[in-house]
Length: 428
Ligand code: RNT
Ligand code: ZN
Image (cartoon, rainbow, N blue to C red; front, side):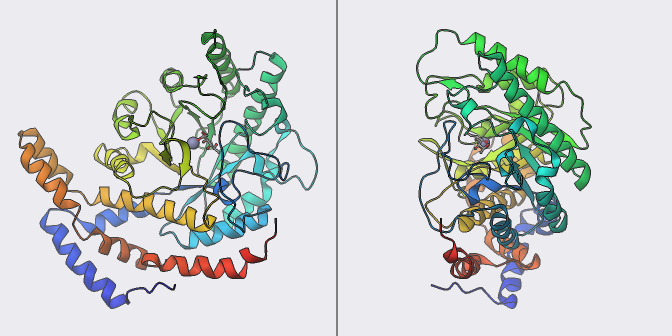
């Protein structure tokens, strides 16, 4: 099935109507689009190859996370992954960043320990990012490794194992600073570790003390925040760490509050199903300078489904916009669906994050706030519900059109073409 696009005159005509409708509510659609254009989403490289990386091709994904599905055509090496990413970026309006993991190093076949990784192992990524105008963010990979086999890394009781992971994280911060310096935009180096226990531990405190000490050591070296900024990511549970996770939300929130400038990462899939990241943002940003979002879609467990335009995705972006938090919020994506075309997965998820953000920017927040302040909760509800039917899709279409990317579902035509021309030739 081929998807057709509206013609430019149709796009413009629909937009003219939408612009008037929004203007009547006091919303400036041009200003909303200008704000949106300044936002760079960090596209996670790991959707392209099911979090495999190139360190040890075929090695299983470990660390309490899992990618399910075996859709054909996954990237087998860095060149393929970059080529796939190039297509995704061409299908997204705006200029966006890349979020890289340490296992995506290119060592030219040489075995390089993760504690010995250096900027030169990412030279090809850097050149490519420079050419494409992408900032880079980075992550130590503290999973899928023999020294993480028992599910503990920075909190491991064995000081030698702990030291290995500390050195890996130190190496990653330096690589991050190198990216930031070279690209002129700070790299966010985000630490997530899988450490936890399958069954109820006796000692919940010891591992947390060790993790705190490890983090102190990792972060001891001062790096210019214009080059590298550090983030930490909490989690409720993982596969095999159902009973206890060392780096819980409270652990990292407390740690970040005590370390000025440290960014707190909130992953949408890392909390109780009834607990919402949208409700945490305004609390966290009272005490922490910046947040990093891992926009994902948790389904029952931290299953990392492709981001949809769900109520929660919208609520998160509303909170970011309503609070004036855009300058303090770094938006990254984190999902890995191996059951559908991976390039479509990336594109659908990223476009939905952008659409949710646009919707939030098209809200007459001042009016809603006024109604709330005078206690007119009837009108607040009425207006909020009416907004759902406003012609925001016409604004999104013109935004895509102006950025020279496919309008509507027609982006899928290009994905299908690439699938036939490029992906189909890839054998595992
Ligand atoms: C895992 C975390 C983490 C990873 C990536 C691959 O639960 O969400 O962010 O998904 O580092
Ligand atoms: Zn995450």
